[in-house]
Amino acid sequence: MSLMRLLLIGLLPTLAVGCSSFGGSDDDVDPPTELTEFSAQLRLEKLWDQDIGSGLSVVDMVLNPVLDGNVIYAVDPSGQVTALNKANGRPQWRSDLDTHITGSVAITDDLVLVGSQDGDLYALDRVDGSVEWTTRLSSEILAPADGNQEVVVVSTQDGTIHALNAADGSIRWSQDIQKPLLTLRGNGQPRVTGDTVYIGLDNGKVSAHRLTDGGLVWEARVAIPEGTTELERMVDVDTRPLIFSDLLFAVSYQGGLMAIDLESGRSSWFQEGSSRKDLAYFGGLIVTTMLDGRVVTYSVTTGAQIWETSAFLHRGVTAPVATSRFVAVGDREGGYVHLVDRRTGDTIGRVRVDSSGVSAAPLSDGSNLYVLDRDGTLSAYSVQAI
Image (cartoon, rainbow, N blue to C red):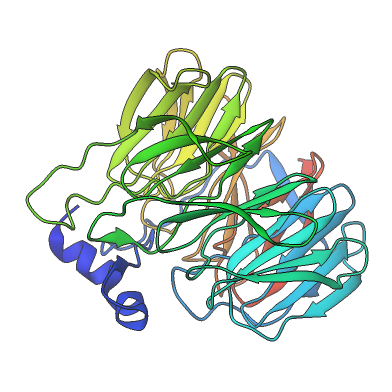
């Protein structure tokens, strides 16, 4: 990616927040690819829609909702958190935090977690939305937290990993990770599994830490900084690690996708690429959306590329969601959701959600899709064969 392109991508959000981080939108200076006709095999029919608050005004901002059981949890930038019944879209509760939210909603067994621009992590009761506790951390929170009944883990923009007691929000431990001089604006969501937390870092690495005290178990380098300028050397891992069987998968900006042995941290295979979107898994394949809009799948065991589609180049596609029938991605440029065949990558369905665009990854419960557009409307669609 050229120096001018990165400057164009990062200029506006950088000026807004300071000189240490760039915006790193998935947008591109190249014009979006025009959508073409396709042989439709699936149709999407709207079931309901619901306003969940104000929309997104910053181009590269994403606040992903979360689906758990029969409830969808969503947050808007002004601090309104909503729990909706997935069957009809009716709110079960709303909670107004009256703060600028920058970190997507996350859930544990008992809590709904959201992070703010001021560095506050809010923990809400999942049943009624009441605030259980609030903890001020070291800097802005740009990624969702993760945790279990005992511990909540979250990263902050200054490069610190924090572990908090889930009961009261008190800090158990913090680990300062050395940040490069220049990074993208964003962080990876940690993944808490068993007694370990795995997290992507701004230095191009993934690290595993003991959940008890934050001690380092291993770290693996996903991408090696290359180039003569700090812009060219950015290799942030701003995605949530994906775990399948005994492997962990992570993807970096200006680096690639790596499969890592979960126990030792050694690399199993590597494929070059550049992405800031979370990975998905289905049927022995890893699927990712690249920075340029390509949707690509790889074999879990060998890393061999299985298929890719360039139908959505430069359209700002979202992270993928994989179901038993298709892979779905949202489209920020035109506000569409595209369905592609799991076996071939061919487009087999499409619906326009809203002209404001879609930047949050669609949610799926196996039968229906739930899509949050940039104007702040959450919509549900049934997916039916034609």
